[in-house]
Length: 435
Image 1: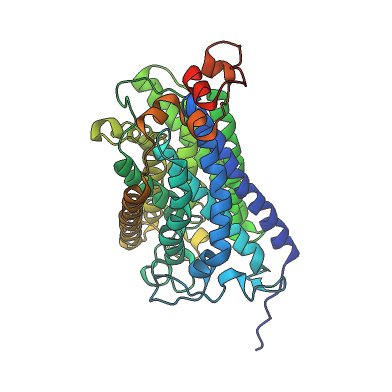
Image 2: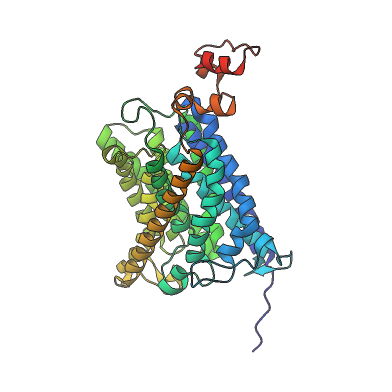
């Protein structure tokens, strides 16, 4: 019997084109989400850290990242080779499954982009922008790319040898960004006034807008990972919606019980926590499983964000509490709720599959988290030694928007009144006056 030659399916291609655009939109959405959560004096810096990640990761991905992540395995399941460096040999007729390989590579690029941007939330308000420009491409190559190969690449050890499941990025995106954020928290140390000064979000409508854009883009993130316009994409789409809803409700329930009032920040954070947790499992669990996964993440993550005050690490925007913890929850619960009608055979503990799959998921979680933390800590320490990673005290107190970018998001927010600072003043004097 002759096997049919690979061919491009126009329906699958159209859906993946749309999904790629949706995932790319998530990084600007994240910029707004993070930007609203910081104080007025550093909102533009926060936006810039996300937007510049798009440019930096794109260059690295096209140069070598895609080949190392999705090229044929070259080092025993650890990383691919450089066959496709510079996207060599990948023309418009090259096919990956039923979609053009160039489209598949672009879709995967958008995952790498937002993962790097996610890390920035852990070190908001205090990182040198120049150091961030160095960190992102190095981190993408040494941390994100190998983990992506382990989980999704041909011959990757987690995929082929261990047999752990991850449909859309619980390990390469969520656990990797969360563990890396924790490492950088420790490298840079806490913000000035941590645990003493009020550091409330300056613009909650912006946070809600950012969360809405993230949720919108997440349908491309998860359903697009089916790589086709098919029933699996539809199931992942519905699971994503369901988990976001129960995550939101779970977080609000905890706030009401613990604090006596549900908050808009809690609603946004809960939805994101549910979406984080369903990312690895959206293609493995039934709708009931998705509802439970989202609820578990909303409840647990609402408590996890306060761990930083007890353990004394300053995770500015709760990357650890939401993305690391939520990613672990969603990845592990595959071992409990995996349903064979979704996976094609693998079953979780609840469906009679025993402890085997749960054990495989646990091994993968520990390996990915430990690797991301250790390598990121090393990169952060090296950059800190060579050029300094943390902004100086005066910059941090004045705000990174003025001292780094010579801009302010809201003139009235900086000055305290509507009168603009004279454009004839020297830059240093403007900064002193506006501070």
